[in-house]
Structures are given as structure tokens and as C-alpha cells.
Amino acid sequence: MRAHLGDQLVVAAPASGAVRRAGEIIALHHEDGTPPYEVRWSDTGEVTLVFPGPDAHIRRPEREQTAPGSGEGPEFPSAARQPSAAAAGDLGRRVATERRRRGLSRTETAGRARMSPDYLAYVEENPADPSLATLVRLADALGTTVASLQGDGIDLPPGQGHALLHPQLRDLTPEECHALLSTHGVGRVAMPGHDGRPAVVPVNYEVVGDTIAFRTAPGSVTAAAAGREIAFEVDHVDEALSKGWSVLAVGHARVVTEPEAVRRLTEHAHTSPWAGGEREMWVSIRPTSLTGRRITAADR
Image 1: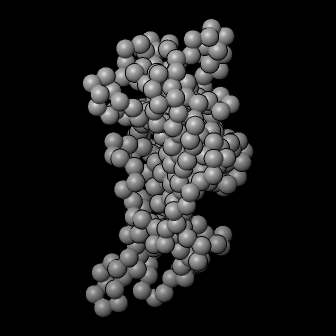
Image 2 (image 1 turned 30 degrees about the vertical axis):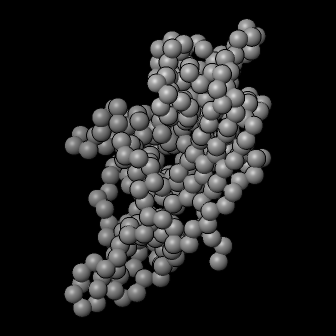
Image 3 (image 1 turned 135 degrees about the vertical axis):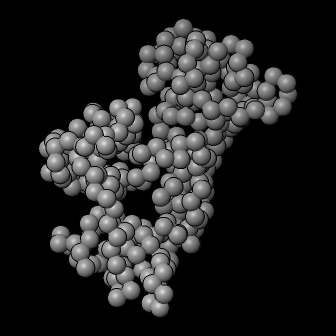
């Protein structure tokens, strides 16, 4: 038996031949493609080391053609399989964003994914159509999933995968919480709205020292946070491994009015508000409480 990354390992029932279990081969232990394989099972999402028995066989997906310099196929995709420029560009941007988020260089990522740095640059910067095997290696190198890189399920709420067989939920220290907040990202502000009803609104935020800051517009829902004690929440869900964490900051919000402080925040902001429009009002939160929790696999 020989396999490639991205192939499916199918285990059939001995008597009927019906598929009993199937999973994607995400890692090989021998260059010639012989067992054992690391398989991510489609029914549980778990990854296990498998030594296939006589009831198992390999199912190979249709191979895609790739780009010049990849060393993985003909130079250009066929016209029938050529994706739209927008879709391919989105894939490249997702790869580049995930790589930078993890602090990896192209050379480091290419080494982990067993491809040339030139081909990785091509994928990030051009309307490329990588093979499934290439996407599997890239996703594995970046600690994410092929579906995430392709943008599948972008309109669905996160966390629809299976729970871990033996999950462990633990509290985070304030130091861990502050580290997870990182320097910037998207979080949620929870507060009473203009009509007195609870409101939760996502915002782009920055972390400066021990202060969280976000931009809004006067008269907006989030502008009502100023002068109140509010909650601010950030989280991350790893769909592939059914792991995740959340951090909750509680503190008094105020409008930043000092010209120098406003200038400094504006100049050093990592991104403009995704919602667009004129949002020149900065609101800061200095947490009086910083708590969090993380779900991981239990040590056994």
C-alpha cells in the first residue's frame, strides 16, 4: 500500500464492503508512501497513527495541476479548472495572513510544508490553484485546516465540529489572558444599548500597554460604552482540533480626548475599522478584571 498526502484511507466492513470509516491522510512517515499514516478521521476529527489492515484501501482524489516552480505538476492549471481571480486571491491572502499571525517567514513555512519558498510566494501573490495535497501540507504547516484556507463555512458560526473525547477546561492566569489579547484583532464589546437593552458589538481593537482601545463614531452603539463599566471579550476556536480559548476583560470605558494620545493611537493602529466610515472617536478600557478559559485535550 502506498499513499500521498491528501489521499483518503477507507476502512470497509469485511462482509459487505461498505465504508465503515474514512479519513484524510495528513502525514506520512515514509517517503515512499508506505504505512503508517497519520489520519484525520471524518467522523470525529481526531488524528491517529494508523497501520492499515487488510480491510483498508486508499482512495485518491482527482489531482489538480499547479503552478510553475512548484515541482508538483504541469506549469499552468487547465482552463476548465482555472478558479476565479477573486477566489484564488482570497486563498493566497488567507495563507499569508495565517503565516504572519503565527510569526512564520515564507522560508520557515515552505520548509514545514515541504515546498519551495518561491512556490509559496506564488500561492500568496497570484491566482494559484494548488493541489489538494499541497493545501493539506500548507494547512498542517500553519496549524489550520484546508477548509479554513479555502474560506469554506465563512457564513457559519464557528465551533460546529465534534467535541474532544477527553476535553479539559482550565482557567487562565491574568498574564496568559494579556498575552492572548495580543496587540490587536477583533473582539466584542458588551454593554447596555441606547434603549437600555443589552448589546454586543464586534470591534477592531488595539492593545497599548494595559489598555484596550477601539475606534467608533459619535452616536453609534459602541459610543454608548463611554462612561460605563463594560465587558470586552476575545476568543479563538481551532475547528480542526476542537480546541479554543476565551478572554474576558471588565473595566470602565472612557473617551480618549488627549490630542497626543489620540494621535499616537491613530498612527500606530494596525488596521482601519472593517466597518468603514468616519470612526475617529477612540474609546479605551483599562481592565479591572481579566479572566479567561482554555479548552484542550486532557492529559491521559
